[in-house]
Image (cartoon, rainbow, N blue to C red):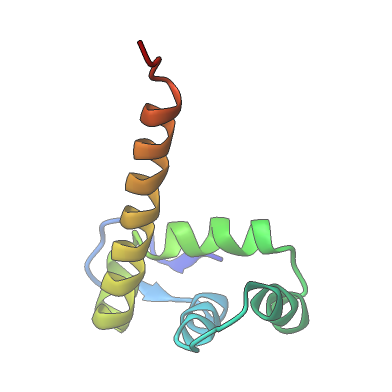
Amino acid sequence: MSLDRTSRDEPTARLDDLAVRVLAFEAHAWQQPGAKAEGIRDEFDMSAARYYRILGELIDSPAALRYDPMLVKRLQRLRDARAATRARRSLSNGRTLD
């Protein structure tokens, strides 16, 4: 995935075809993680890990935010919530009980 731009923060940045397809794919409501992973392989011919790296970069891009602000903000909120859950889990695992 690349953004059609010279600078990451350039206001006229445009999304490439892959970025637009990833955002459209993310707009679907996936009920089962296995089905989504299979869809990623079928649609993009890449591993789920690579797809999620691309998606992570994409949802931080100003161009994606301009393209579909509601979707991108929802994806950012979900990512932030997962990170907070991981942080809480790792803090609770590090505690010792007296």
